[in-house]
Image 1 (cartoon, rainbow, N blue to C red):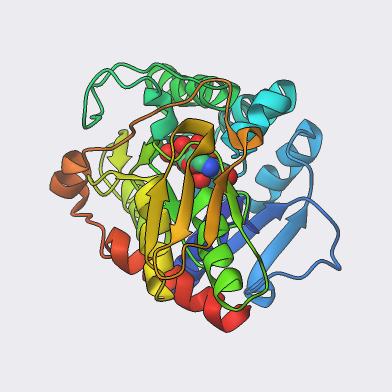
Image 2: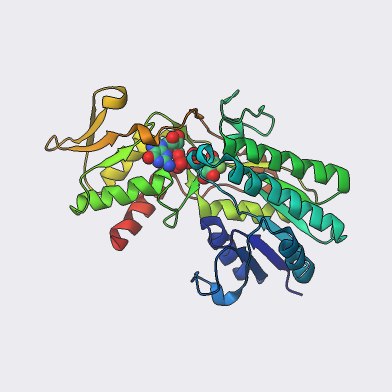
Length: 333
Ligand code: G4F
């Protein structure tokens, strides 16, 4: 019998990659998304889409009661760290309380033995990193309302696993990107801008903190790790990362190189600019509006546990990822 999966956030980047993977594996895939049935998503024909706001507990209860999924992947979130400083309450309601509600529903419906639960946890939990690279044992120090909300979600997942024997796993996912990453995340903002600048459609790229370092992997690899976690004999939490850190500045350099522009940096702090080395034209400037009140400066994960237990490893390097995204934007723009 085909397994049934329920994915929240089906229309997000990870929802799209995960649904493709599960459909290939023969799953019956249900997805929850906001909006109306007219809205269009890839794969929609192969997915049972439930249009619902996850903060509506009664509706969520009904969906889970009807679908009785073998696996639930909670990918829905207010996932933008900067936005969480502007909308802390909304971020908390969505990110912290939805996983609690799902776990409660699993328990209330007596589905503990049937339904396995995956929670999209995050490398942002490490915030002011106490150890480099960060491991499953590294102390958490969240640095944004987003990270604090995800910290609750992480621990409630552990708590329901221990208290009620629910097969619940946290994937502590570091940054993961793809050609369908929205532009409010820095990778896609940069790859799209480099292409637009190259084609004369945009003058400059405005960015915030160039010195932040992140561990960027490919979303297609990360959804495989989510699935693998739910196929193990025992539930557990795993860091999913590449183990390599790069700065936003390096990301800019790599992306411009893909369109044959060499960037030369001049100036300091808010006055720093990135110029086209061949003609001195300023292409990158700093806009303080993109700074966060506080921020995690260096996030890089150690994926050894996932490698040893799940047999998971990333298949795409940082350089390949930037190339893949830039090439895709070249075709789109
Ligand atoms: O792309 P970002 O917005 O991603 P961030 O904040 O690292 O969070 C992402 O990864 C987390 C996992 O590690 C997820 F939990 C989270 O949901 C999300 O997917 O920013 C990356 C870095 C930051 O240091 C930011 O300050 O880029 C810096 N940055 C510099 N200029 C910018 C910009 N970020 C954005 N979005 N826009 C800028 O103009």
